[in-house]
Picture (tube, rainbow, N blue to C red):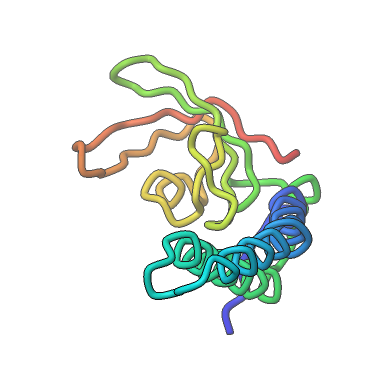
Length: 156
């Protein structure tokens, strides 16, 4: 089984989601199924089928989170230094548009570009790994090749 890198924040986020699913969502769905059963004929009962579908989704998500957490290797970025690697917070500038962006390189389960959390397996993260402040990287993506200069690397 492959270990999955997570930051402490990512692990806490998944723990909180799992607790919510088990303590709030699951009991609410069980109540909804019970209420829908009381309406009679299940073959034409839309509420029942909707509740069962939601139950299937929630149970699948619980299994997924439990699997991720069982394989998690929690890494504290504050204890790291050197070249860019998992956990690094990197500020880059697009060499064509001069647009600056800051990303933290994180594991797949916690990645969220809108929050500046870059998936370790993304083309940009893979290009940045092993590089240092001041280096330039070229990233090939579906939108074409782009060049970035690394302005800063921080482990926090």
